[in-house]
Amino acid sequence: MDEYRSSGPLQPGDRAPNVVLDAITHEGKIAIDDFRGRKPVLVGLFRGLQCPFCRRQIATMAQLKAALNERGVESLTVVNTPIERARLYFRYHPLPDLLAAADPERISHRAFGLPNLEFTEDEDDWPHKLSMQTAMSMRVEMPGELPVPMNPVEASEYLQQADGYEMTEDDNRMNAVAMGQLVGEFLLDRNGVVRWCFTEATPDGRNMFRAPSPDEVMSAAAQVAH
Image (cartoon, rainbow, N blue to C red; front, top):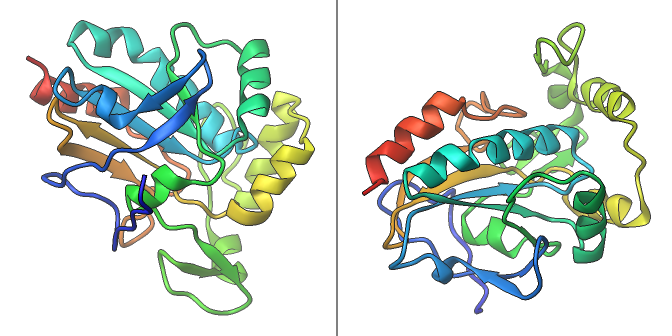
């Protein structure tokens, strides 16, 4: 596809661009246009599998798959992890019926307008730049997962250890170029038009490291189901 760039995250009413990616959970390709004209689809665009917050968001999205399918809504998970690394991960951590695609170049993230946040020494220009001082002042609250609110680095290290996740060369390579890649979920109707979204790129940054509640997702799905 031609390189597509958006000035910000796609919003309800915007037409989603077609993106063609390598399928993780089966052979071949997956494209946004595979669903256009057929059924609505919830598209989750995440960082690489090395991100413990994203792994949890992916698992939550997978848990909703059956309920979404009952409403005639498909779901597609996209990770910026190289295809072989992603296939190996899901082989050992299977999520039933997960439809997933690999996007190590983050083509889909750019196409849907999700910025790759640059960490700086002292400059803040959200959601494009964030100083380390500001980043370290943030607190991640995950009751049941974290014993106390922690800054993002502490929280990530704690979750990685709790998961026993071992970083690979592919993981480190993805982190080097896209540690600050912002993520989001976009619900497209059967015509490929965005009807609902939840992204980390909100003006106040309140959604960082958060996922929409299942009730919020299902409520949105009810509006596009036929």
